[in-house]
Image (tube, rainbow, N blue to C red; front, side, top):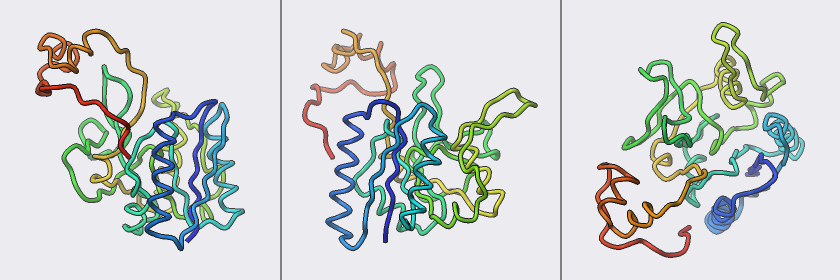
Length: 234
């Protein structure tokens, strides 16, 4: 099987992301040596342009599926294998947004009160309306049957709201009769990298200081007995 690992990005790639990409490639090669992983990166200002370029290249190279990875994600090394095992046309891991003041997720379904899907503590698969493409597997038949454009930023004049290229893609796929799935187990192991201001309060939190911990985390987590230190685990 030939899988195109497609990474749209800006000028830079996060080092923690690339560590995970290398771990994924190594793990998959060791466990599925018959598979071919073709890692492709498209750098540019417009992510929809990068996605369309990567998708066209994957089709031209005869890929069977695309693993979409955003360059600000962290994930387990067996991510691809676990997504493939479900044999779905479109399946993805859920992950948190990067807004601490209004945190949510990138998975959406109109049946929920808030509109978005919380994967915390859930297991198994769930059919949904749309999801971000930070860690998504798509079979190539979906693109072959979908008229272009595959990825554009949409606009709803009724709500004066813009829709990202990932949500546009999911909506278009559902319109063609495809289902979009979220994998809750993988979502527990998938992270979204962002910027964070490190202060002395965070140092105090890491070392178990009660005042620093409360400033950093409130009462949501118990203070650790000692700081956790070490190399990135992959």
